Length: 543
Image (cartoon, rainbow, N blue to C red; front, side, top):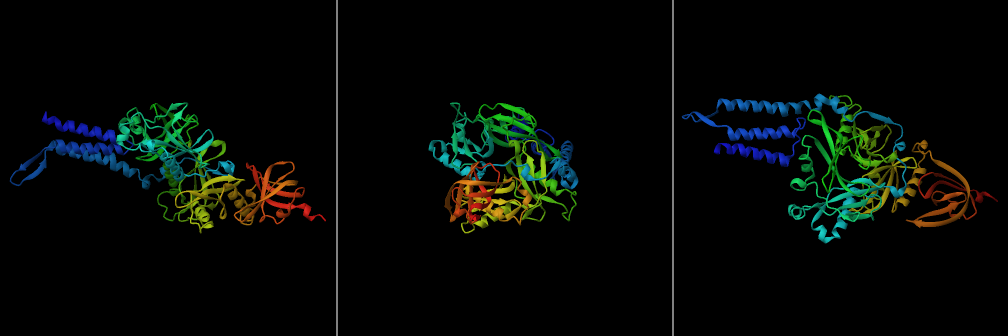
């Protein structure tokens, strides 16, 4: 029986390593061979018997069978780990890495790809602020807040509205042990309205119990649940918490394979797990439900885009000729037909302030479009916005690109040191010196358009194609003073919208009255209140 104890000990250790380590049982993944080598080494320690070939000299040697076992284990070590790792290096496989992103299409204008948007749909809540607001609503429930903590927020569209959604997770082992049926719901924070924060604990009058979680214990852990239900041989990544349009919670996990030796992660589909019942459904890229926003993990796309730009002329390109790199990381944006994209700027290696182009990667299909047009990097836009209010010491959030009147524009919030939004900023992607700031998004848009229209000599005038000129008569007019600037709101005959212009735009606006004949030009957009880009009062010229 004593002779079998090492054998049973090895089996027990192996079980623990597999149960908690969850290695992918597939040769292409490095974790499995490393774990097996650990078991081989332990086996040698347990079963190898040393003998003294010469007791006088006290020399320890391995017996011949054990010496052979050691040599075989060493060969396995080299074959299963070192050799594949070496042959996976970009030094030998740069062309394979460069092609991982797939075919990169060339786009004409990025404004054609990103859908026009009204200012009430602009994202003004970033992940940090969402977490702050989520913690606040959780703190308003003392009994609940002592039992759970917020998980990671995931941005997604729910019934065509943009939300940050995070699950409630167990805050420790004993909290899980006393509440194994699951935590009571999730938090939703509107990405467009910081006042819209919800703690969702019921769906159709039924309580929510999120049993399967990241970081839970034993079989309640979502990764372990999948591993021991048929997915031990599958690469799994990007465990994202999403809800469908009815509010039902799910975990969305990306399935992936290795395409370059032990490297080159590439998504092949998703696994959708009911966060309450644990029911599992597997989808490839083409048949994934439409409410699932992301299949391609951000880390995969970052690596593939950088490799695409880095190895454009192979590994040995010491002059950095034509090398590109992403700027500030990737941002999720929504384009035509509500498709979601990973967006980033591309800059030449060594260049920081200006981008040579911009990339949009479909978050589901990985279809990639490269727009070869110069502009500001995200960092340059942030610096420009912060410089506009430098006396306040505000920090700019990560810029989000939008199509505003066919003007590719970065939009960001300006936050104080406590993380609260104090102002908003818009920066033209084509020229980061064109900046508008304001206390509201309306003010910011008006300020931005004023600066933009006054900077026609700096930008491409063909970038604005939806401009209209109208000769009409004033029906109503009223002024409003904001931050020391006078704004004049007026309505006209035969056009339903309200127009607004500042006294800086035209000195004729302050003396315009009802009944005056005017000529205005403006951008056709989705707003109820439209900023005019030019204003002329014809009645003032009459004698």
